[in-house]
Structures are given as structure tokens and as C-alpha cells.
Image (cartoon, rainbow, N blue to C red):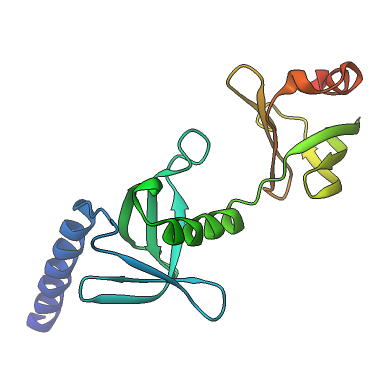
Length: 185
């Protein structure tokens, strides 16, 4: 029984320490962080005495502020935050490009340049579009969460697999294309 109490106290102290670390915000700057590309195309980080062979890059506000408050996390299953980059522009050009590359990989979001067709069948919408990466077909639910309006004319579309597509300006589409999107407006 005494061993169980000692184990509980040890875990409690460790948990307290970990909680305190999580509550502290660490900003990563060009003065205290050095990012590098790994052989496998990932990103590593050296900050202070610590080195991370691989880190993950997460956007805190991916739609509204994609280059501010960027969370850098450990690459394991827990994804514990190492620190925040307040503004990407405050890093060197080389460091900025490495981080942008990782963001493009994580947040792949083709821009829809032309809506060729949208068919509504049995609660699903079947899309045939032209994107910045070529012709694409995908399926969405007909729910209100599928197409989200961001601002006056910007649309974000999420397919059934969680892939995201963007229409930067709904009004730049042709009249026929906009008519095909009436189901979602």
C-alpha cells in the first residue's frame, strides 16, 4: 500500500511539472531557434540546449492569420508544443521558406478556378472542378458544414475525406458556375 502511495505522489509531481511547462509560452525567434531540413524532407529544430530531430508545424489560425502564431510541436504521437513563432516574417528568409514548405504539405488546399459540374444525389454532392493542380473530382455531404463562407466572397469546401478546397472569390466565377453552387449558398 505504501508503494502505491509513493507511486501516486511521484506521478502527481510529474504531472504538476508537465502542467507547469505546458502553461508557459515559449516564443521561437531567429535568436533562439535554428530550423534545418532533414534528409527525409522534414524539419528539425535546435533551440537552446535541446535538439529535435523532427518537428511538426501547425497553424493556430490557418485561415485568418496563416503566418502568425505558428505552433512548433514534437513529431511524436503527443505532439507536445515546443514553442510558438509569433510572426514568420521575423525569421530569416531561408527559415521562412523551410517552414512555409512544411505548412504547404500539412495544409494542402487546392484553389478551385472553375466549377465544371456539381450534382446532388441522395444527400451527397459530386463535384467536378478545375483546380490549381488540375482537374479534380470529389464528394461532399449536402450539410451546411460542407461549404463555409469566409468573408464576403471566399469559400472553403471540405470533402467527405476531410480535404479542403478554396474558392478565393465566388464572384470571379462565371454566372453558370455560381448557379451550380446555389445549392450551398
